[in-house]
Length: 327
Ligand code: PBG
Image (cartoon, rainbow, N blue to C red; front, top):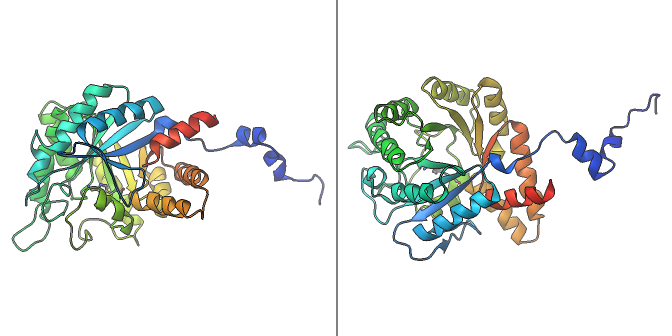
């Protein structure tokens, strides 16, 4: 060894030194837990492809929201599963639709103790499962969809949501949602734009969770996994249209995108660790092939290290509890 001896291992010799020099920490306040609520359920139901995640009844959702607050999570992202669907997804805009009533349930339960967010998209509510309304020949009609999103945003804001998350990847959605919120007097409701959202096979288990009716795919509106620069363009447009925060989705297979987006904009950057990312680890852990907790925290740390300040993850409540014990 040359002198002076450079020995990086000195800073790895025990847990105390490693803790001192750790470059990345996750705070429970940066974790957001997605939750599903299904219309008409008397009891919560397990989702087979998302072990440990539930389709909630309205009652069990309230309780889960309180538990999430107690665990210290930074936010809750709500998804609704309606009892019936139609061509134009009217359950999403109906003030009595399941997502809108669930928002007011949760907000009345937790108040300002955490940030209540809602998915702003039609796919859970349409009979064909697409994120927008269709033209006569079956294509997703961008501008007609925007009108529905505007109405949906106002309904969610009226129900008391703090942040709306437009996730349909229609062109112009952030601007339209922002203008509609402002016109209805909801200037305080923030927009978390699903800005860089890929047409990903990792959404598979989510589609079970919301009982998606989709046949075919979303490649005419979600992005091609091959593209990075396209994400920068999407993010730039969303920020110009008034996005308060931007999100990359999925997370782990797209850490280069997270990192590039972080470098490109000044707004908070979120990443969504999606259902398939979660399910893969749960399946491997159930087989005894990986150490579940270590892989969980390693994935979250990597997403954080890549530059996501906020992470949506189905592990949020458990991870928050684990992190509490650790630090
Ligand atoms: C659209 C939406 C989807 C997810 C979140 N919002 C599904 C899709 O785009 O097909 C996927 C989340 C996940 O897989 O965990 N409403």
